[in-house]
Length: 107
Image (cartoon, rainbow, N blue to C red; front, side, top):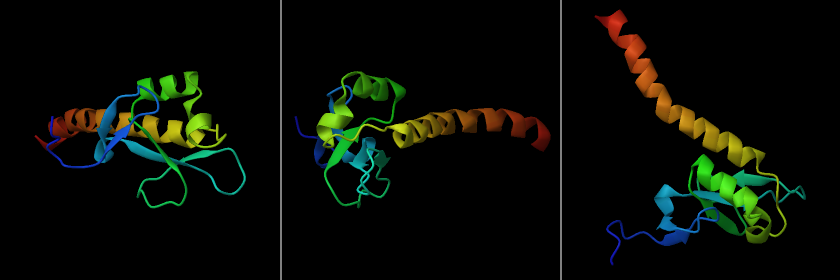
């Protein structure tokens, strides 16, 4: 079962399903002593990383399972992750809504 993209596979801490790095968010613990979990958009931040599908379902499962604390040495504050996932789901819906409002004006 060879993966077509040939990228390393990572396991989502929410749903526990494997996926390629490109379809998962990399998360890291904030190194400044707080318990915050940060989204590593460029995948270059130092420290141990955890991986999560960018979906509210996987986020809810990760919170329920307390997966952030286990994967990232006690980090529990997922507010940054929630903001990123909610922004990502709105961005998916926005082009469709924008296209509907733009079309009548341009016609």
